[in-house]
Structure formats: C-alpha cells, structure tokens
Image (cartoon, rainbow, N blue to C red):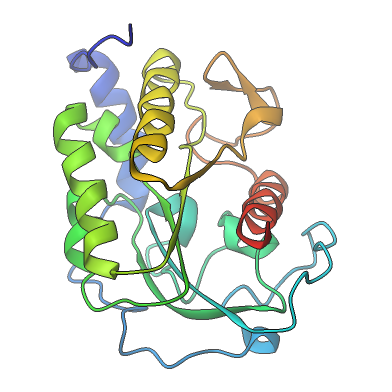
Length: 237
C-alpha cells in the first residue's frame, strides 16, 4: 500500500525554499499560452541543441502538435525562462524536431500544480506533455490536491494524447519523490494516459546520482536533454 505523503519538516522545507528562491514565481507569467503562434519544428523553442543527444528518427510523416505544461524542469531555472523560451536545464532541448511541432504551453520556475492548472486554460494540441509536482512536495501540498490539479490541467487542455512524466529526483526529499511517482503511475493507468519516467538512469533511491544535478533539485543540461529524448520517444511511440 502506498503511504500518504507526509508534510515536510520545517527545516527541510526551509532548505528547499532557499534553493528554490532563485527560481520563484515573479509577477504574472503568461508566455507560451494559447495566444503564442505555432512554431515550426525547425524554429522550435529549444533551438540550442548543442548538448542534446541525437534525436530518434521521425516515425510519422504527419505533424504532431504538442503543448507542454510544467515548472522549472520544463521551463529552465532562469527568472525569464518559460515554456516557449526554455533555459539550458529544460528537458525540451532533447525533445523537439520533426514531426513534433510546438503549439504553446505554460511553464514557470517554482510553479505548483495548482498554478499549472490555471495556466493551462486555452491550450490545445494533439499531445500534452505534463510534468509537475516537485514544488507541491517542497511546499507541503498533499497528494489529493496534486491529483485534482493534474486532472484539471488535462481537462483544461481538452482532448488529446496525454503523456504524464515522473518528477525528477530530489536530494532533499527522495522518499517523497518515489512515493509521488508511484502515485503518478497509478493515476496514469486509471486515466488511460501514457506514463514515462525519463529519470531512471540518474535516480538513486529518489535522489540524484552524483554529478547529475548542480543543486540537488534540477538536472544538469546534459541530463535534461537526455530526459527530453526519452519523453520524445514516448510521444512518438
């Protein structure tokens, strides 16, 4: 039986919030919502792929439109990094390429699933890639609320194929990460979504393997790009 997520201890929460302070929500961020025009695959938001692994060959001739919703793992860690202008620590740098086409998104560093739910309104595409929950754990949000918000994101985007990603390891609450990802797996099965865990190679009991994260919360650019390639393969399957 999967245990209920406990509240974070105050000292652990303080440490996490100190690390997250550099990528907290600032102002109202709406970049990347439905009003953003479609970007051709050759001019995708993840334009800098110098550190990304080779992308798998396209498996379809038709364009597959994609929207992405997430936090700093999707946007990057910079204060102005967003879904359509991802920073170097975003998994998107290993993801884009024909036949996938960016059709908007919402991702802000420090975002919780509740904020993702509000930001997803108006998005639409063939595929939704959803990755969120790290900041729920960091702020003590319980699983019932996280689940409700994730369901709300999917409902806001509407019809389309859903790819739900595991959240990355964390050196601050590894056991909570394992528990949360187990719940995500069950949720995807219940809803008929596709679940993908792109962090298997860099997770050691829910924490980052040595050398794969600069701060214990975010992946290195190389690891992020590798994760993006795994998510891409899941979308194209």
